[in-house]
Image (cartoon, rainbow over all chains, first blue to last red; front, side, top):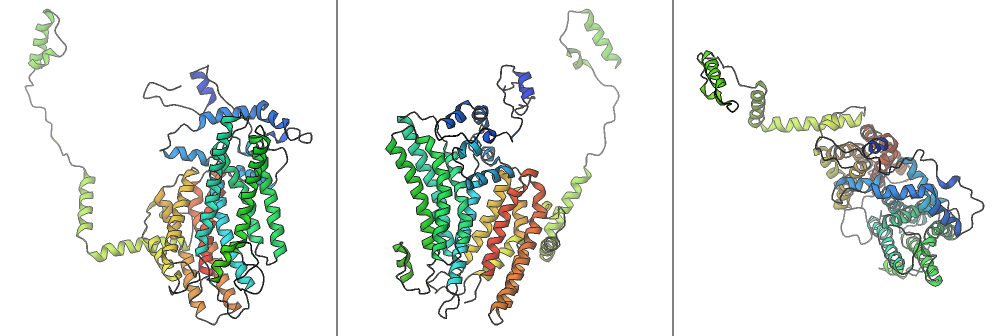
Length: 305
Length: 236
């Protein structure tokens, strides 16, 4: 399709044009972005084999695989290369957020919503919002807990914003990197049908963190039971999204390794949420002695200094 | 001309000669007048303009820049769809506003061990890196606004929040209490809404229509964080 003549510039957009240029080329035409595999029969889904049908026999997955090969054609030092990661519309971002909030058994988040168009908009801005939500909610909650005490002087605790930012961005980028490396290594040993690219894993992790934004805001309520119930709910929802996404990728593997991988993913997620709750939110008892009923020893050490 | 015809006529009967070979024999007998003016009126005008700004007094230069900045402040305070902010962008206004805001927001004493408010550098970094991130985000989403135009708009729209900071500082001189907090909350919310409206009036048009919300949300987050810093400011 590359034209030799300097005066003729390349058209990639129109299928008809490229077909007239080279009739042998394969062209993709996607008419309706609304036709997603959601319309396929849902109730009869088990856990295993239907997913394979969805992955292999589905028209859309074929098209999207081919599209993925055509998309990222710019070299990585040009601006256009990075623009391909922000090629999402508003409704697509909303759909992906909705998918992360409502995990349906049998629906794979990556295949259903990302469909070879991973974006970096969602992960980046969800993490930024989460950082500020945790820092601001923690500050507000501490203020409300200690309200009325004579010795308490309110401080905005701005340093915690940078700590929150470091923790959350490290989680959202390093854990996917480790998971991707691990999956690549297992892929070389066991032939898996499903393999995810690094950006798709980053995307899943980023969108799965969305549930923690309302959770962080609700953590302002100074009741211990309420906070732990919120932790359980949020962990349940986002953990199940992650587990259902990565189960197909490790299912073919040794049973123990597969289970260990899923358990590790969920465990790290829980560690993040419990750690944030312990560090940024004071326990809602009315005393602020150094010995607090929190499992995090570093928090106690910081408060006693 | 008659001599040229003669020479080419002679050449026609001989063996075929190369093209244009007979031109060296042509001589022009009469003068063809070729004269005129080769001056471009524009260039002389520009040269005159350059030397005039070079020779003008310092007060003129400073007043011209100050007037440009002041005009843009007026555009922010009364936001209507106009291109002045975008066309003649400058970064003096944002710098002045950011420095003022950071100076007023920094914690008073450095001896507090507990975490206090943001330092000057923290506010500065948040404002500038926040503006750069939002600009990159809108460019990556496909907006057709230039980098510095977007920085200019975002910086100038901090003006209502700087005014809110001034008002909050004045209100904090009175005795503390819930009324004090309510007044400050109301002022900050009002100025926050003003900033958002002013910046979206300038920035929203440059985005593709199905991504407007994606480009506007980071602006909302940016001004929200600045408003939070203003609201939680406590004098030492």
